[in-house]
Each structure stands twice: as structure tokens, then as C-alpha cells.
Length: 233
Image (cartoon, rainbow, N blue to C red):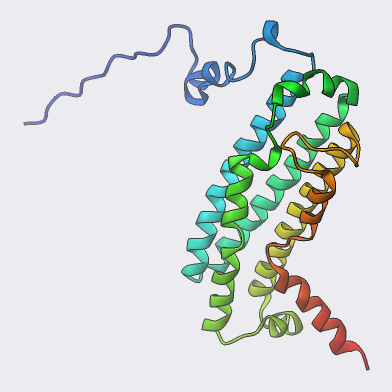
């Protein structure tokens, strides 16, 4: 005998729309300081910008883990599509970072003490990307090994291996835009506190500048040197 369908009564707050319940907007919008507790006007923008970073980094990490599995299973097409997605995310974050340029250095100093020793490099989302991104290259190299190709062959025989080339270029795009973010973040810090100052986390900005040379996928940049040398007499 088929049991009749029973409807579970809703426990949602009265008056909330489906949109509000699905996105949990009430909870989301309480994660920032109340206006009456703001130390300075720009503090709210500062919090929102950085919370947006964390959300997009969460999405990026989710896609990076998926890409790892896809490459492991030789699904280069889908891996490349998701690489393009995370590249777009990083460009969104570059624009998001530019929002902080709308405050003046003096206004930033008005609430900088609230940050204490907090630093952008302490971001759990940022640190997760530093952890998840490099191992993807091992998976891509494994794909090349399974089809018995070198990176140079992928780049010199583009008509034969368009999918592998597209994937390699998507990796390059991601590596490039991530370094652009790090560079722009440094320039923002220099703009706010001066290039010779100490960051909120106690790190001299000169030391932070050295990280701009850190790459996720150095082989993709080195292959360009190889191609150049191949064309020279």
C-alpha cells in the first residue's frame, strides 16, 4: 500500500522569500560590523571586500580540486573549461581589490589598528590556493606522459594537439592572473602605507615583493625560453 505524501511544516521565518532562505541573506548580512560599531567609514567596505575574496577563493578551491580529478581521469576538455572559470574569478577579484583604492591612506590608518597583526597572507582561502594549485601540474604532466608527449611538442605541433595546448595556455592564464593579483595587492599596500613600511602582519613590504617571483607552473614559462632558443640561429 502506498503511503500518502505528508508535507513537513516549514520552520522558516515568516516573511522570508525563497531567495532569502536559499542564499541565507539574513545570516550573510550580519557577518559585517554593525554601522554603529565601525571605527571609520571605510571599515565596512574593507570587511566586505575581503569577505568577497574568501567566497571566491572558496569557489576557486572547489574548482581546483575538481580539475585535479578531471586531469587524473584524462578529461582535458572539462578541466580546461573549469580553468577558464577560475581565471575569470581571479579577474573579478582584481576589480574587487580596486575598490580599496577608493579610500585614502589617512582613512585606512584610522582603522588599521583594529586589524592588529592581521595580514592578507593569513587568509585561509589564499593559503589553500597556494596549497592546491601547484599539484595540478603533476596531473597535467602525467597526462602528457600517458600520451608520450613533451611540453615542447605540444607547443610546436599546435594543430595536432589543440586540446592539450588549450589546457596548457589556461594554466598559464591562471598562473599569470594570480601573480597579477599578488602584484596589485602589493601596490595597494604601498599606496596605503608606503613602500618602506611594515605591513599589518609585521612583514616588510620589500620582503612581500619577493613573492612576486613565485610561480605555480614555472615549466610553462621555461618552455617559452626553449621555443625562443629553437628559433635562434
